[in-house]
Length: 441
Image (tube, rainbow, N blue to C red; front, side):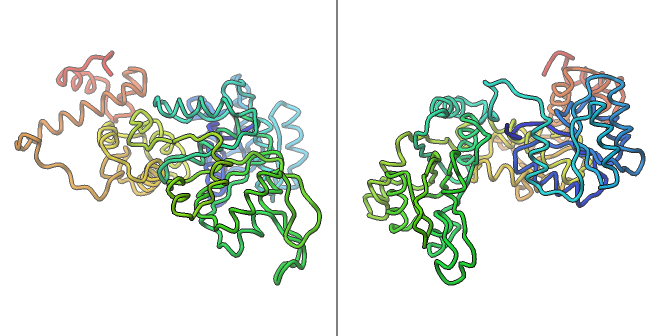
């Protein structure tokens, strides 16, 4: 089972521990709601609706067990993974018997933590395996193609611009085919050529100077799972030749070793280069190109799929806001307008980085265009050359922001007024003046 796309709560008052867990779960694609006190968690658990809760037993205002029991009394409590000190094991076991979920003693290894968390998460339907790639027609087509080949070992070549989401697609393919097997990602451009062979195929002790112990390479560690070779175009010709032989014979040996190992993984490659031109130029082997290009899928750039911009922006906001302990209520409606007109030359990676920076440095309770694009100067003149009045600019900004908040609350006036920091009467008056109704958004 994958953690990608799952929503979990974290109740931890230790800032170092909390930040570490939030960052690690973010790498898994998990949305984390982080609370630092029991009362804060109890107040927000119902609204956040996490699929599971990671909870320290010792908290500054109350025990983690009290949080669990109070939530259990209301019914529909999600499973809890308790983090305990050694002396609290008996206490934790009692909570498990009461239906909590599982517990983990400090200190713990991250793989163990992730495995325990996966173990308490509710199962998802088979057709929901893997996080959605996007709402746009282009990404739905990509997802459909990946699902078709998920159950077979066909080699897949993912092409597209840097930052467009090729590794996310590779993980989607892996999860759709059975995420209980290893997924090994290798950036071929990040490893020096003189080390790449040993990293890819492993080595025996004493195979070369510095080889002090046997080392299992990426091909071996991938097992029956997926070996993802990113930036495949950067492999040297010598390594291309060795990789081709492994893919054809489905076997290899560690450097300095005689034992022949079976290669059972699916190979997924990715590149932002034009491999056909590389073949013509003689820098990429033609036979390897045809071997890895059994199924080629083009991942469209973000500028060609505007339907995905706001869902991605909101997902990254939900991921980073808890980790920075940012006192943010949400995303201003003004952000949507500028986000949809930005060309996103850095694609999804640029969007993620901009949101992370914006959340960290936001000056107010709402994420604003100046937070997302601090390098831009506000527009001073409209297309017809007329300078808009201050009142017109303010009214348009208020109108868009009210519409966004109404959409967030499903037109619930009291909740919308609370989020906006005004009374319901004031909200009604503003809506009347701006020509809005409670069913308009």
